[in-house]
Image (cartoon, rainbow, N blue to C red; front, side):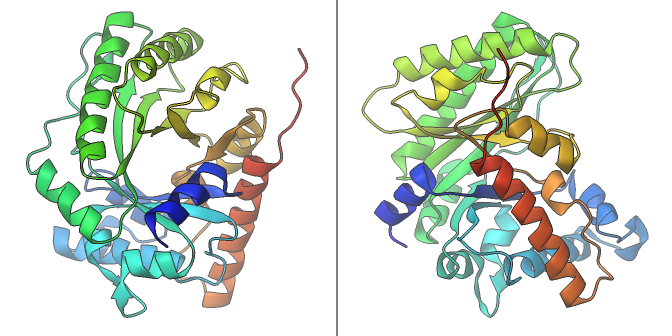
Length: 301
């Protein structure tokens, strides 16, 4: 797929984006959910090899195609690895799946109710390498824990500064200011975030578009103005700790939003499954998330 084809698929394709980007901190938990306990590896290299094998098993499954999975977010090591004897980005292209890469390096300690992204040394080199490997875009995550406007404004400012760097390399950024779904004032955070994002989008120079990856909102339809904003290519939702059934039920209440699930996608997949069992379980998960992304449930006023 060329850039125009990938842009069209992300903008209007029917389906969802698979988040296969667990990094060092979240990899042990992902492997445990897959049925591989901490004692199964003795070094980070072995741990990352195991998670790569899991991702390759997902990517190469007959269930994982561009018919229902329009994109996939990769960890840097996955982008650099192989699947079916080919570079992973090429395998995704061949399946009709648009590849993205996670670029953030984790979170700062909480301040003003939020966690900003840590510094990203070598970002320019990573972006250049990603573009060369055929990646379409990036994803960068920060976290909102309380409804503090100054903190949320700082997150949005940082996200859009990074987004401009990404755009300068011909890539499309997925801006991810995650609202903690366990927050006591989650609805207020959603509202403040919507306002700050609209202001930042309105102020963007040029005519490039960005994507937004947002928590499932407390109030269905909260992000409708962002879905319709002319500078937004697509709005996707993270599962944020919801189990798959609940995440899908919440997503279905939000027109215009598609899934970009990680834990909710991997739920129920196990290392010791036969290939037939694994493919069937993955296919069922993909069908459920696809339905929530494409078939919306009317919500009573």
